[in-house]
Image 1 (cartoon, helix red, strand yellow):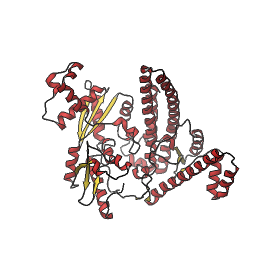
Image 2: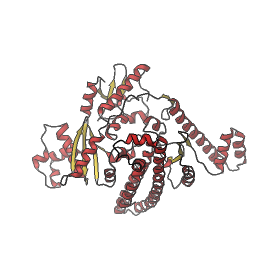
Image 3: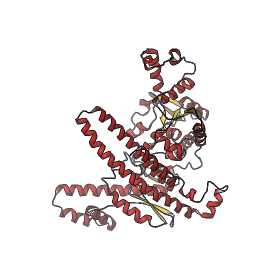
Image 4: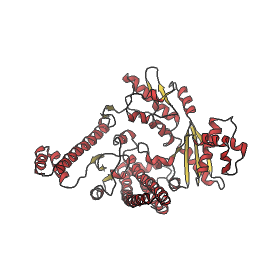
Length: 495
């Protein structure tokens, strides 16, 4: 998809998923939006939101299908270029495929905005829809037309909204999420087609295995019989997972799909997420008002954010260079200042080359990459629409540096007894999903808690800071809440 077309689609879809109802009722222009909402009523406002979601879903589906078609053609071209050993064509096609993958993830993130909104920003409920190694099939090979037709049928009813889960990246079960504002309820449903699925669904709905057995006996091909049994098992697994998710959302207890262990919802509703999003908005306004400067850096309680217009690799290095001298090594000499490099030949100098290697190894997080992370709040909630469009059309970069030393000090101040432990020793014997989720700081990991209960600092908490713009203090409160819960249960965490 051309950058111009992609930008145009973002401009059309973002208001539909973020502010359609608010714009319709002119809430932002009102001095008392709460009064207007009280007069409108929850149902009427929700139905208007769903009206925007229905329009957005149609565009998202069309764009994802277009991207899938482009990717199919480009993959074939890439294979041919590799056979021909055409390095230039390989490089160009690979870059285009990478850009298409980003565009696909952005459209899925827009659909994630819908999920988070209809689930009322409840991250615990939303995470119950996720599965290990979750991914969706290509829309070109799935039963997308059946899903579109079924969703369209539901969406004719102004009291209902049907979301196609395959266009999201954060829902790994069910084909549709149905919201019914008349009954104030939601549910997951499967949409299957073909004779095999008809037999399976009839068997399950009537609870009569004879139906499946008779069909199986009628098959004279061993491969078809194996395929039927495989599909039967898959449908049962899907139904069980959907049932577990619904049970967990209603009762607060269920089975963890990642570990198979019993899990219980922890009530931390007294902890409100505190964010520095307003600071990001103010800084972006200031950056865009500046006529000459293209960069703006500002601190938050455990790090620094770098805003860069018209980003280049050199400007990314400038941000890392700033972190190196302002935070990590404030008293050290700078090889760049010493040798005043004017061209790339200066990198032949060992001192400059060593300094450059240190700078570029500083870990920073690119907000753009958040769209590939389906476990956290969508990025579009935390930056203005104009800047969000610029972010994904290469006119803006937002980098986040997480200051471990500052975070460590805050944890210490809050009596969380932080400690940096050897990573390999800390995760020894843990399953792979736990090892991968523990944040590595070099060869160390951060642990916290009490003398008897030690917890590793996980990516989930880190990403709340760097991708959701939650303050360190807010995350630390959540960490303390977890320790308090574990103390009450008299056990260490079971991931």
